Length: 274
Image (cartoon, rainbow, N blue to C red):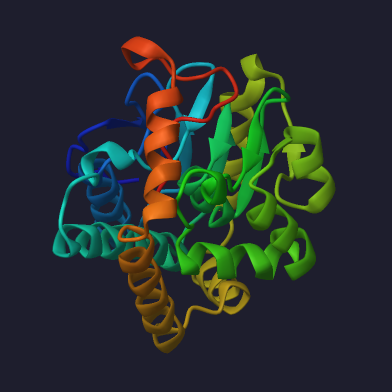
């Protein structure tokens, strides 16, 4: 493989492991997705996909506790509609970039994977997880909503009944539960997770790229018109719930209830949004 030239990403690192790129989200304490990280991840996958021979990618989180706790809403509180809409557009663009990435994408879920983090995992070709990982869409309990594109992906993979239960309760669930519903392909011990993800990426990367790309496109069925409708739904909903006093109270209560000094709660519930 030729030498890879890709941009640096604020809040993440990437490294070439013998032809597989390991992309690590690294924003302590919970690898939360702020806007610069979202934009950086989108740029990474867009520029990589445009190369002549894109490398397979393993996406993971730094540390032992968090893949990512989702988006950090602190940067949105008190901002105006234009900033909120911009954030929603950026996250939607990231999901579109993942949906259209033509090469193997493996998620190595090393810890809590909730909110926007679960949306990222849903766009991976293979999801491996540590047994201690947790998953879920807790947004309803925190005055937020998932991105519509992420929800539609969840419905396609997991089924409407399972997703309805997840999003309307906001409950988190275990890695074993994630295997049982088809979100996670298999569990790996933490010490073996990255190596197994690399092996999986290399095996998938050895397939004929033209065939892999075509099959992945057929399975994912990307649709620009559908994406535009999802984006419009996401923006409209966000404009409503950021102006709603009840939702604002949930967000404020969540922010005030988190542990002091910026430490993330042990159950993975930090700041989730899009």
